[in-house]
Amino acid sequence: LAEVPPLIVTAILAVEDERFYHLHGIDPVSIVRATWVNLRSGGVVQGGSTLTQQLMKNFFLSDERKFSRKMKEAIMALIAERKYTTNEILENYLNEIYLGQRGSQGIFGIWEASQFYFSKPLSELTVGEVALLAGLVRAPNRLSPYRSPDAATKRRNIVLVKLLDDKKIGRASCRERV
Image: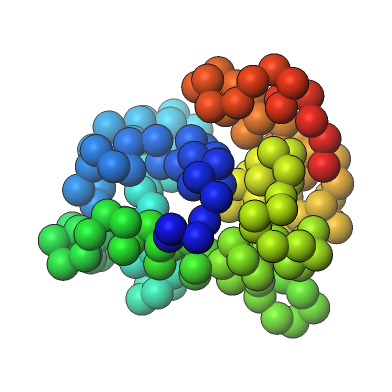
């Protein structure tokens, strides 16, 4: 984790789990919000998972969208938060997160994604490139710059605006392009 540029962590947390350092595995507010949105829409359109829950799902569970899977995920996240430090969980998440496909091979972890998408190490990424990687987390295949450049650009810009609104970057950085 010490080798990860801070802006990458900041960007991923900003769009995936803002309260990561203040929770203990689950986020009741996000769960209630997602449940409300999903009930109103008549289907699953929003998730309420923390990074810890996502990590547990990726390691141990399937992608099936069932209440029973979400319950297992939440219990496992609570156990993981008791057993591991927050930084250990974040480090594992950054190393294991799925960020797209290279043919039949998955791209896992931010280091591999940096090499695949930009052919350079994390330490050399621009603000726009960091925002693009952070934006991929939500839907790596749908938001891939190779498959859908417009969707990738739109999501990258959402991340840049979020970082600007949170005062994590300045206006000049927000205007930066990949």
